Image (tube, rainbow, N blue to C red; front, side, top):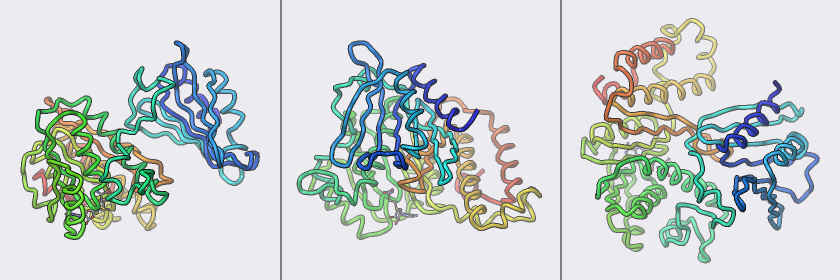
Length: 392
Ligand SMILES: C[S@@+](CC[C@H](N)C(=O)[O-])C[C@H]1O[C@@H](n2cnc3c(N)ncnc32)[C@H](O)[C@@H]1O
């Protein structure tokens, strides 16, 4: 099957079994009308009939129409390649991307996602566009995301997309997690606090008493976030200047760490494990520790040709680091998922690890230890930062 046919097959299947979540056709090609920017597809139910709502984004307006699954398949097949060069389709748990290069050659790529099957409410065609984050909240203006009129500033569009995507993922996980009346949460390496504010708002909206702490070593950012939280009356939200490792084992239910540099992500994982976190949401940043510790001579002989090249070594180090993080988390009784949480167009740091604490072991520790040992031996890796932090 060709790449385009594989992509279309995935889309047809998701439409057929009602797991379709959304699709985007973008990057107009030579056959696209001059004012056509992109097309956004989402499933809707109108008078009991399952349809696909098509929103054609033109430079100055949007055009909306509803098509059946069969009509959708025909139109997408017509538009792929000449009218649009990038096609993304997402179903519950899985997404496919079809890209055409300059020579018009297609390539398809699949990845896991955190999306769930849409609810009846999601499928209402007249649903008000639901972003879990309230753009009208005063904190977003204070943090430089919205302007005076309350709209998202052009410079903040990517950040806003990330905040919403993050909130959507955490919201989905929280719905499946039993929460106590008071939820203690920490954002490790909170930076300018966007996600700390979003997390606090999300917990408050769920009706729990939220005690959310942003940990950040840069004092000026802590000052800015603290002032914003107080001005906006965010009760239970505070920012503390300090290192992630200073958290020690203070108890908490929820931990997030997005783009905390290098082993700061490992410090955050260790803090979550020691604090008994039920849920962790992590988006790793750079992966220096593992990249520097991989020894070509100790690695599998076939790895030499990969580890010699800087860029390949870097990408492989990222994969090894995060695969090991997922394994160490599993070893501590967390069920993990690793997926791309936002398109690579918006940020290259787009891998997310979610970890949900289970009451029973996820897999036998011996099996996990064996996988850890094999992966380390393959990569020629003597140590991973988490080993010392978790004492394993
Ligand atoms: C790239 S920013 C990400 C900010 C925020 N999490 C986000 O995704 O918008 C990383 C932040 O983590 C902070 N940081 C890195 N290592 C840290 C550590 N060990 N302890 C405390 N803060 C740390 C940095 O100062 C920086 O502000």
